[in-house]
Image (tube, rainbow, N blue to C red):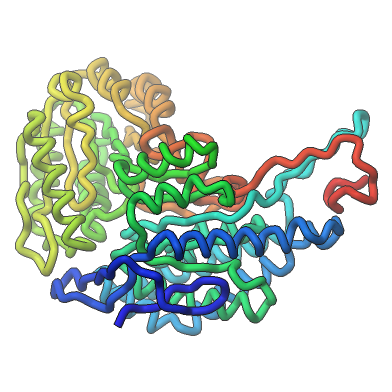
Length: 511
């Protein structure tokens, strides 16, 4: 029997066009059945969300009430506590659907991160500084950011908790700014999303959020998805997923003039300079192998491109990495589609001229898997086929580009597409400073977050964090998906008050 969807504050059967099942990636066995919603479900979710938004922000013009974020903060705190109370069940379900380990990954790291960012969003909602209230007394013009309207969140496959469509960063940001959320579950972990939605709805009821402030769909047809993101009743969309699907949604949203915030693809280049290799070759090799292979490489910040300068130390470094890749057991991939996509990416790079140092074919690990793979190309090969050699390999694979000299390495960096992160390892005592001065300004323009001497895998929930970057890392380089309060402003509109009487102003804008 197919699981129910959450619409208008109640769980009900979907008006479905069909069903689907997630799989256990280790055993490859099908799990529970979930519905594929028709436009009828989408339309009702939009209608209810729009009605709830207008009831909260339009029907009562009292400035004090309209700008009171207490209910949203209370919801986020209550929701975090409820997730923690079901920690074991949620982690076990996520493990069954994704093969990610319960401990330490899900229960000890990702779930606490999820509840932490919910609480950070609650604190930001209470504080109100995210709204950037600005007062020009001389001209009596004032402005602040306010809610934009119902938000649709499309969650990714690789973080079933911290980026989940109904619990992750996009969800928390949209709620904290005062918007209803329609969550579109990722089909790799619908059961986990359903458990989270149960607690979200219970928290919403407890603090008195209107029915329909929290809603959940599991899957829609492609045309209905494009129709959703372009609907006039929608405020904005948050999407994390494949570039191909994201660009179709973006085209539909752009045509309708609707904001859509995308995280699409990133190969996260890591440049290692000669002085760093001379100083700490083994340590850097260990860091790279760990970062590339951890979680079977299924991180949006996985180091998928390694840039080195030709030389004896580089060859020893590559021999060390190859040995580590051979010694490590391939991890289980999230799904059959991830395994298929990784194999396709590897074959694309090989056809473009890269050759295999290790791996290159489906692996012999548990369930869906691929051999730990390291490919190699010269700097000249990269410059001749930069687009093809930047094909994303989402998983336990990376491409090494060996440049003949610093000038060629700079030209390689100049050909990079936009990325979430970029890193440069250099000599601690300054032997690489001249090379760094040449590379860093070029890399800075290509990445959202520039790192020194550390792999990019971790994304701290810090106010200063930028988890974004130039296209195709994201659809807009000026916004971050991680980092409160900045992430909240994606789901807000700038509201200006010109010569408005004092008693009609939001409290934050009064003298």
